[in-house]
Picture 1 (cartoon, rainbow, N blue to C red):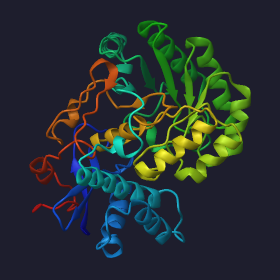
Picture 2 (picture 1 turned 90 degrees about the vertical axis):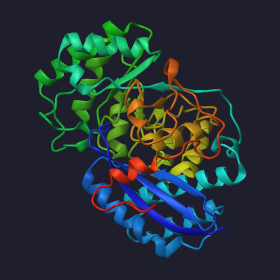
Picture 3 (picture 1 turned 30 degrees about the vertical axis):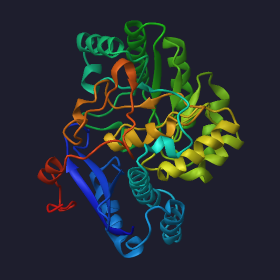
Picture 4 (picture 1 turned 135 degrees about the vertical axis):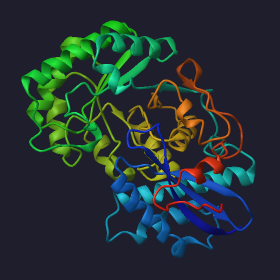
Length: 388
C-alpha cells in the first residue's frame, strides 16, 4: 500500500467561532482513506497551513502509510530551517492522525488498541458555556445548569472582558494589563458561576496567554479568593518560561499550560522546571497522535496529569480521546460544548458524550466515516476535492 494523494479540506461550519474546520485527507492506492485535522484559530492561518499540506504531495506520495514514525520525521525535518514549531507541527499533526486512522482500518482495530490498549472504559470531559450566555444572569444560570444536568463535572471560562466581537484566542497581547473594572467583572462572573455550578463542579479559568506577570498574579489571586478555581490556564504569553515561573511562585491555584507548545522538546522545560500542574497539548498542533502519546508518557514520569486541548472539530476530539484511552495520567478531555450535535453533519455516526463522558466505539481507526456529500457542499476557497 502506498500514499496516493493528500488533500487539505477547509469546510464551512456553524459549530466553530471561526466558521470553519480544517481537515486533512490522506488517500492510498488500495482505497483506504485516513482523516486528520488541524483547525487553527484564524482563517488566515488555516489557509497558510493548507498550502503547506498541498506541497506534501511531492514529499510523501508513494510512501508506505504504515511507516508512521518514518513519515513523521521526514516531514518534520523537511521544515527544520523554517522552524520546527508552529505551522510545521500543525502539518505533521494532521498527517500523523490520518496515518493512524489508515493503520487502524487496515488492521481492523481502533487506534487506542494500537497504542497499548485501554486503561479506562470512557473519557471524562470538561466543556464550555456559550460566550453569549456569560453576558446576562438568566441565560448564564440556564447554561450552567444545562451543563451540570448533562453530567459534566467541570467547565472552563475566560471571564476577562474583551472588546465586542473579539475572540479571546486572537491573543491581543500588547502590554498585558487588565483594568480594575475588568478584574471586578471577572471576579463577579466567576463567583456567580461557582455559585450556580455548586462546590463539586470544577471551575477552570483560561487567561489565553494574555497577561503580564504582575497582572496575571493579581487576577489569579482574586479568582482564588472569589471562587476556589481549579486551574489557571496560560497566565502569560507562551514565549517565556521565566514569566511562567514567576507567576507560579506567587499563586496557589494549579497552573495549566500546553495548547501552544509543540512536540516533546518544548514540554521538557515545563516538566524539568516544575512550571505546571497540568499540561494540555493539542493533538492537532503538538505533533499528532504519535507525539501526544510521547508527551503524555513524559508527563507520567513527573506525575503530571494530561488534559488535551481538543475543542475544534470531531477528528480533533476523537484523536485526543483515542490517545487518552491508553494514558494512566489522564485528567479530562476538552470539548467546545456540552452537546456535540454540531459535529453530526460532518460524520455519519454521531458521537456519544452522554453523562459528561465520551464513549468510543471499537470501530477501526478513528471510528468514524466522514460525510463526503456534506464536505463537498461546504468547501471553502478551493481547499477540498469536489470529485472525491
